Image (cartoon, rainbow, N blue to C red; front, side, top):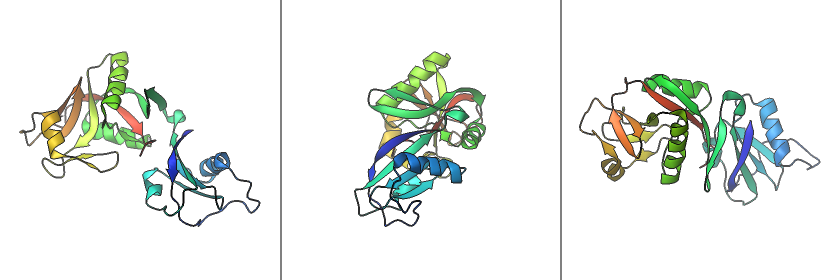
Amino acid sequence: MQFVKVRQLPALPATVSYTEEKLMDDLDCGYICLEVYPECASYIYNVTDYACHFARSPLDLVDVYHATNNAHLYAGCDLGRGFSIQTLNDTQACLSKVFTEQTYDNASNICRDMGGYLVSMKTSVKQQLLRNLMTDAGTEIIWLGLNDKDVEGEYVWEEDGTVFGPEEVVAALFDVENILANCVLMKGPELGDVECEKELNFICEMMINI
C-alpha cells in the first residue's frame, strides 16, 4: 500500500490513541492502520493529541472531523492489488491497468473486489490522463463509473455518489434520449450513454483525492 497525503483537515477530539509517550508520527499511524485494520485504505493522524483514525475511504473520515487544523489525512493506493499512482501536471490518481471487456455491472463488481470503483473523470486533466492510459493499452473506449440507473436523467458517480448535473449531461453526453441507455462510456473526448449490457474495457480507481 502506498499512502498519499491528501490535505490537512479539521478533527474531533481523539477517540483512539495508540501512544502515551506522544512519539507517534504520521508514518506510525499508517503502520497501525495496516496492522490492525485489514480494509485500511485511509487514515488520519491528529498531531495535537497523537490519535490515529482509519477507514476504507478518505470520505469516511471527512465527516468525522472538525475544529482543528492539526490533522493530516492520508489515502492509500494498493499496489499489491494492481493499482499504481498515475500523475499528469498537478493531478494524481490511483488507477489500475486497462482491463478487457466486461458489462458495466461486472466491471463495477471487479473494481469493488479490488477495493476500488469504476474510474471517475471530473476534470479535463483527469480525462487526458485516462486517454494516455487508453492509448498505451490500444483501446478507444472505456466504461466510466457514472450511470442513471436509479433515476432517469440523474447521472451519479460511483466514486462518491455525487450527481453529474443536467447542464453537464447536455454538454457532454450523446444518445441521452434512449431510456434503456443508463451507463456512461468515454470515447476520446466524448462521453456516451449506452446500454449497460455492452461489454467494454474499463479502469478501476482507488480514491486518493477529495
